[in-house]
Length: 334
Image (cartoon, rainbow, N blue to C red; front, side, top):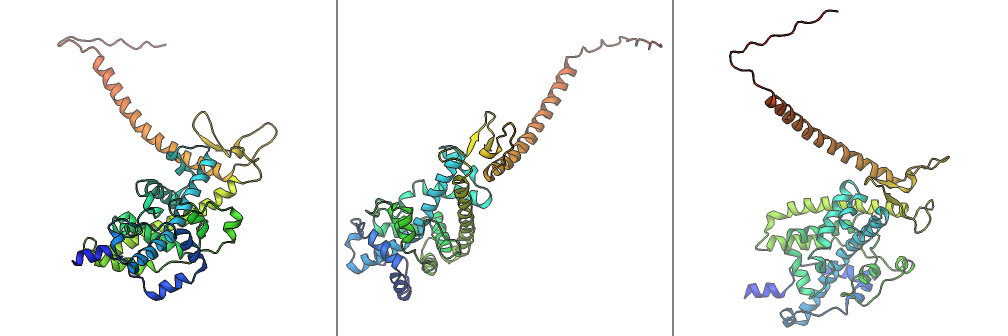
């Protein structure tokens, strides 16, 4: 019976003061109005009482306010990388980033575009979405990292409720707003309230237990740092793509026949020397590292081939007959 009660109730216990603080935010109120039309529960959770269902909706909306700005950030990073690299191949988009930003982009690419994409956009039964937060280590890590990013000094470009809700058709009937309208809408408040509730839920969960929280927090902190680096890289890419030195619609990066990526500013013309763009310098640096690695790997293989070739030559030499004497021709003096 106790197990059934746990299934009907939300695993998160957010204090009343924190809930009232969120509800007082104009941005969070606007987001909840966008998500109000998507309140369809599954048959199992629809049997719960009205107060419990309202709690499920509140916690779903908190998750949406946390996760959707990061999802929008990934979508923006994906678009900027595709424009800067002039490619639609998803496996090549990571080349537009470096360091922690590249690691965060790859992590989001695997998680957001995978089978957990609906959960990232809080689609489906609000109760099932909320309980799925504790389903895997990746879900927990993403939630903690999103909370840490929301309280960081660098805010996501898509931290407005209109942008986060309009990108999820299944969660909101609102269509995508214009950039000017998005900038004028109230922004979402920081949401650190989920962290104590999430830690308490992990501690009381029969699968996780209290020993997992330090590990989860450490991994999530690394992911949050990578996401902030990704935000900074997106700012640089935005400046690069919209640079006035390149006409609108002109490709910023071209792929040479040898496969080397060079920026628009790295092409030399007669009588004029152009400066390399930031993206070109980054790509050339990474290409140099790749060439150095391939050179080292190729040198090892070449040494092996040389050893094998010498052994083959020595083996092919005629073996002197046993007991036969060989005369050595005297050196001719000049």
